[in-house]
Image 1 (cartoon, rainbow, N blue to C red):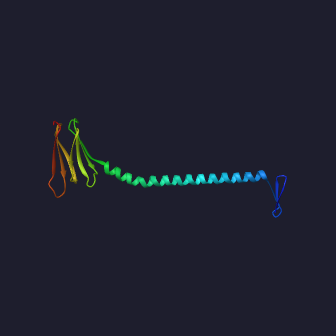
Image 2 (image 1 turned 30 degrees about the vertical axis):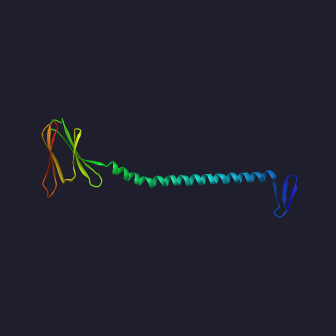
Image 3 (image 1 turned 90 degrees about the vertical axis):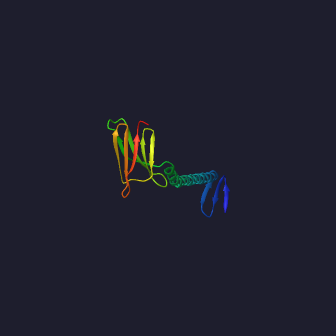
Length: 148
């Protein structure tokens, strides 16, 4: 049974007294705490979703990047006798099979057979011979002329 006496509620069963202003403040504090809890819960869920989406999209993006921008591995750089010209030989991991590219000036020559050994022999500063040796096959010879 609750009795009111000058703005003070009295409960005989519990022998406790609550002022009217205190009751309103408790409700407001409880409501504020509830809103804070809901905000931080929502923020935490949002951050986990963002992290999950980033990790899920990372692997397909990495695959697509490597598909369209293949990595090159430098196999050999050879300079002419007087170091006027140079030849770079790179292995490019194209999809589905890797290729060998001979880069010189602004030109390139592409080979699809990956050699066991390769060498460059300079005849002079303007011409060279690139030799690809694959075991069990004839040597593949590429003549390069820098004057053209």
